[in-house]
Amino acid sequence: MSQSNYNYVDELAQLNKDILAKNPADILQFCSNYFLARLEDQRKQLWNQQQRASAAGITLFPRHSVPRQSNSHAFPAFKTPFGDNDPHSEDPHHDKHTEDEGPGAPAASVPTPGLFRGTFGAPASSLARSVDPSDKSESDTIAPLGAKISKLPAHFNANRRTSVSAETLNPNKFLGDWKPPVRNLTSEQLSRLNSSVAKNFLFGQLDDEELNTVIHALEEKRLPQNTEIIKQGDEGDFFYVIEKGEVDFYVNGDKVNTSGPGSSFGELALMYNSFRAATAVATTDCVLWALDRLTFRRILLEGTAKKRAMYEVFFKDVPVLASLSAYEKSKLADALVSKTFQPGTPVVVEGDVGENFYFIESGTAEVSKEGEGVVSHLAKGDYFGELALLNDSPRKATVTASSVLKVATLGKSGFQRLLGPVVEVLKRQDPTHQ
Ligand SMILES: Nc1ncnc2c1ncn2[C@@H]1O[C@@H]2COP(=O)(O)O[C@H]2[C@H]1O
Ligand SMILES: Nc1ncnc2c1ncn2[C@@H]1O[C@@H]2COP(=O)(O)O[C@H]2[C@H]1O
Image 1 (cartoon, rainbow, N blue to C red):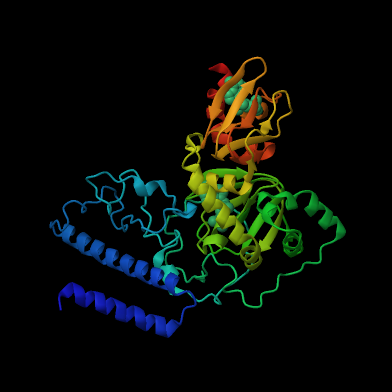
Image 2: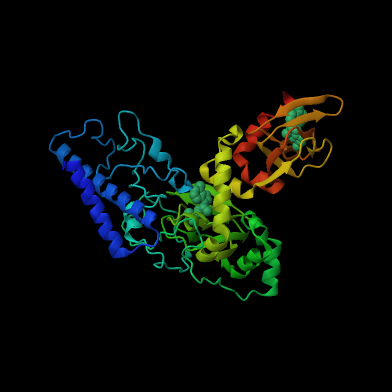
């Protein structure tokens, strides 16, 4: 038996032993975590050998060897093949290698390269240590923020004992006889919830019974300005909806986002069983509503994940959205609603007040104007209805389905809130100026 065959059999034998010892509920996740952890160990060993050799003036791997930065003790960035579709894995540092540096080398401009990233951005070693779904803590982690946000290293939680579980995106498999918490909400709280928080896009997918369950499971949190609500690298415990106030988000110390009333956050770690992807800080006094992890997973997970995955595919065909980050696209997906129109049906009518914006998912449409007839044709990936929302003006044309037309629509508030970086592009592409 060759050496490589021997290692392979050995590896499987060890994996088998671990499986028997730990009896994981989610076998595929366990195997994935196991191999990622092994890969991380192996890369570390190689790196250490390389460091020792280069200290002795020996170049072991000519294309990968010399780290360009002063922090040469840092283990080089290594990108897992599994994390690409998850917003957690979006790490601009990872793709900055040049040909010469090779895939294992740290990017020259990056201060500290990320440690090996696990399946969904979590360090593989931490993931592999705990795969038992019953091993969870649900404590409230809100802590006051004393000083300014520190730069968090990409491997923030690398050596911490974690209790991230290995549930899959199937929310029902692990929850047994789960019962949602029922808070004793006052009628004043309920009326506030119904008039604000219940309108969050993520709740739009729920039927009345599910919405009722979620609302009664929500817990009110009044937080003073500067409270650190979520810390990057921590485990996910709650999902939050903002009733009042503003929250800023930081990734590795850099501000990446701001959210206000009606927005939600903290869903990623709960959806992907991964570590918090960002730090969230109350920039004003805030009133938030927190939903516990299990209720989130049981009621909101499946629909949200499906919708995000579905629109993620479609967004690849929408050039105007190219400037949005993966996270911005996920939030956009939460807000979109698909509608179908039969051939000959007008979707927007010239002169009407505009309330919605549209992307064409499939089919075709004609744009016509009073006195001019058909002025253009639209197809998959095109959009329309932006002019009325951008300029607060009546519809400038009529758009009619010319075959069975499927559109993804976005209301006015979502348009303003979620298409921020795209608005300038929409203005530049104004069809009435062409
Ligand atoms: N650019 C961003 N990248 C990742 N998370 C973000 C970003 N902006 C806001 N967030 C939110 O910050 C939250 C931190 O916790 P989660 O990873 O659970 O979910 C994250 C998102 O809801
Ligand atoms: N030549 C055009 N003039 C006006 N609207 C157009 C034209 N071509 C496409 N459209 C789209 O038709 C939409 C009609 O509603 P809006 O005015 O909101 O936004 C308009 C544009 O998105």
